Length: 353
Image 1 (cartoon, rainbow, N blue to C red):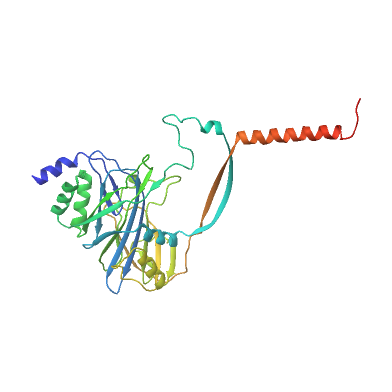
Image 2 (spheres, rainbow, N blue to C red; image 1 turned 120 degrees about the horizontal axis):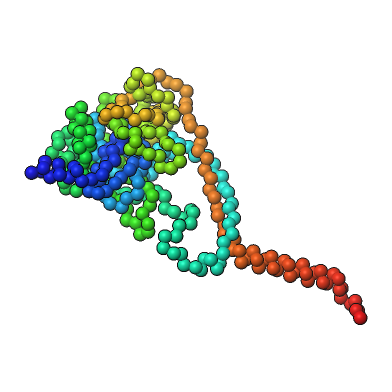
C-alpha cells in the first residue's frame, strides 16, 4: 500500500533537480535552483570529510525537501550562514567600497498621493534574496523504505526521472540524506530568491568526493550573464585536482593557516570538522557531468598561488531633493537679486524728484 501511495504522488508535483541535492517539492509547488555553493573539508589523517552545501532558490514560502547523496552514511545538520559567508569571503575577495552620491528630484506633493494597487516598488526597496531558512535533517541510508517513509511523512513528491536517478545513486553504494527546508515567514511580498540553509554532512571518506549530477538546463544564473555551472572548493592538506582525463584549471588556490581554519570552523560550531591545521584551499569551476556525476579529487603537485581579482563593490547613496525646495530657493535668489539691484540703482540718501 505504501508503494502505491508513493507512486500516486510521483505524478503530482513539479520538480527541479539540483547538483548534490534533488529538490522534492510539495504537490503543485515549482522550484528552481539559481545558485549552488559546495566546500569539501577532507582530513586524510582521520579519513573524515565534511561537506558544506548551500543553494539559492526561486522565491517560495512553502516548505520543501532536499535529498543529498554522500559516499557513506552522513551525520547531517544545519549550521549558521556565517560559516559559508566566511568561506565565500576567502574564495571571492571583495575590493574597497566605492561610494557614489545619487541626487534625485522628488516632490512633497507627489509623496502625499496614495499609490494605486500594483504600483512598482521604488528601486532600491525591492526584496532580493531572503535568508533565515531552517532545516531538519534525516538519514535515509541506501534502502528505499526510509526514503518512502520520509516522503510520505512530509508530503513531498518525486517524479519518475528523480526516482530513477536516486535508484542509480543507491545502486552505486552512495547513501542519501533528507533535509526539510522551511522558509522564514514573510510579512510583505514574496522575495525574488531564497537562500537555503547551510547543510553540513560529515562522513567517512578515502578521498574528497562529491555528487554533482544535474541537468544543465535546470540551473540558471541569479541575474545577469550565465554563472559557472558549479564551483566546488576542497580544503585539505595539499592541492588537489579533479580525477579525470583533463582536470579544469582552479579558479582559486592558496595556503590556509591552521588558526584561520579553526576560526572559520568555530563560526559554525562544527565539532565534527576534524581538519584544523595548515592546509590548502583549491576551487574549481566544473561543467555539470551527466548521470549522478560523482566527482573525485586527488593530490597534485604544489603550484603557485591563484587568486581571483577582488570583486568591486559600489554603494550608491541616494538623496532626494524636493522640487518644491528647489523652487523656493530659486524664488528667494531671484527676490534677493532684484532687491539688491534696486538698492544699487537708488542708494540711501539720494533724493529723487
